[in-house]
Length: 327
Image: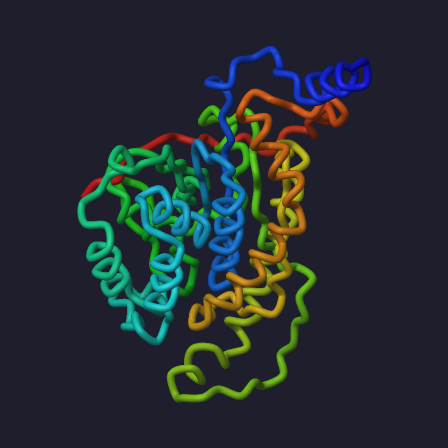
């Protein structure tokens, strides 16, 4: 009997409730940009669902913003993969009449409206936000109110490829320019714990050697060396900025799928990114389960959460207004 009592006491101690009530605990999910690499986010979400990890709010940039909004709107993961396929450039490519991008926004907007209609952020089943960059002021803008379609067009408007989205006196472009992994936004929205999925590929192989392309469209779109150089330079700058922000706002769990084999502009085979995301998330299944226990009001006594490291020196103070996109 003494052995049984000792064993029960051990179990109670190991899984003892912590001081704050579980209803006040919120887990946020932050998804980075990455274009076609963003399909890895869907694989991570698959494992999160398998492990029954409750997500209380979700934020994202660019492709991560698209996944965040679709998931918060209630789309299942198979449907989100299909959206990636339908977003392949050869399906939506029309010349940009404004001359500020290569591809116009009309077909993208039509596709998103077929999917989401006139839904607003208030209509989503989860609190959700995406970030964009105001090219006029150079400031970061958090979009979490108003209709979601213009917000998605803005957060995914990769400079030079898509034209910026006008909003009042602002011209909004891809949020990854200033904040490619918005962990800080998740904290600001009330998350006490944040899972971050980082699709940086700064160490990916880079070459200006000609590549084989299967049709005229591909040759016109991807062959120019100028575009390859600009894309590479932007990815390096974004990777450095992301590293600084992660030092300032460290997430509780950082998942980094190895997406180097996926081209940023390749949305034709989302199943490849999906599999990579599943693999990366399963490698940290133990940490995810710990977050589930914490969320339910139980924390492993033998594995207390380490104190947050002191924040790094503040980054440039960008104004981050929460705005509503006009129709």
